[in-house]
Length: 305
Ligand code: SAM
Image (cartoon, rainbow, N blue to C red; front, side):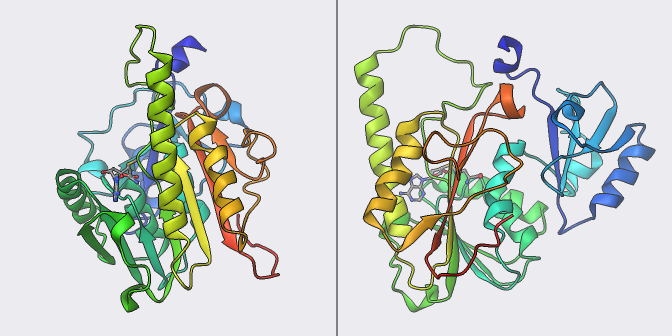
């Protein structure tokens, strides 16, 4: 477990960028490159791979899984934007939001843009993808990454999402929001945790500030007049930033409810928010993560994956 928590034993996840290639073509390329393809993973143990072998992921159709530390930064498919090196947990938000091709989508806190690129791939580059971020430097990195990934349906804006006017006619057709706001990052296992004992009071204050920001973003995002679905995600393991933010949001927005996500996913949100997903190195072989999907009440049965 400790080794996994150091990040060294997490599998190498490779998202196939379906804007540039297909999963089958990527599989063929890797086979020709000397990797042994073991087929579709059927159970979690199948993701624990030896060097030079790979499988298709258990849950995500555009994800390939390799042995930990398999290096792809110099690989042709990476440099050409055909593959994206993205942790499995971080692929969940766009997959679960599942925006329609041609739809209007907001990525509220978007940089450096891995999830934006994933959304664009799901949308087949059709529709409008409004991506906001406060940090100009991160946005400029994002621009380069999206160019390499062949994304064209996006509109980047260096803006404070909380100041975006949700009633602006430009956003009148927005039906989907992905909200992945700044968080404590406590789920990231390879950041080299500070070993000194933390100042508990300071830490609690920091979490409370982050949670207040996250809730403001959520409440703001739910104001898009035609919004149907919103994914909220963090790479935090703290309930303060996850279930507690969702609980407060639902209380303040009775027109929205949680959708039960991926029944086959074993690690669930803390009680009573078991509709949501959690992820961790030990249980899902990923970084620590949280995902919730809110939908507007319509009386219809949800069709989420
Ligand atoms: N979704 C991104 C991805 O997958 O690559 C990661 C987003 S990161 C967790 C959070 C981002 O929120 C940071 O890039 C930060 O600059 C941005 N941010 C923080 N406050 C913001 C605000 N008020 N409006 C817009 N973006 C904000």
